[in-house]
Length: 126
Image 1 (cartoon, one colour):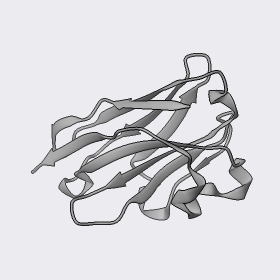
Image 2 (spheres, helix red, strand yellow):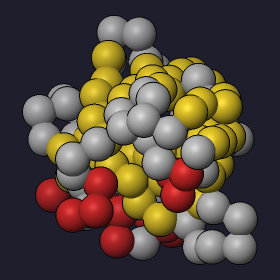
Image 3 (cartoon, one colour):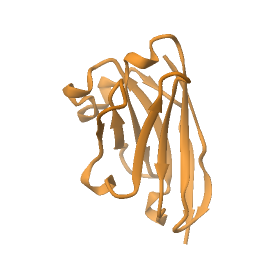
């Protein structure tokens, strides 16, 4: 599956954004999808993941309050709603697809994701 992320931009602290990741390919609905982010000089980190059906989601504790992942399998798109943005949220946000089922927690290892989007830059100014 090929992925294309969009929706990033420059936003003031406290603002919100909705990121989108469009996928091509007929098997999108069979993938566990996730959003990662990578800030300059930092390692890539998981932000959220969602099961193929959209019924189950995962967030690290630090992301639970302000991030919401969802998907629309009809339109082959996964979303990330981010609210109450902080300057430390500044990063490139990447979407990724894993053929592993959600219950296998593929986000524990980046190598479990075989498709990556190009990323969309989110810059939060104070």
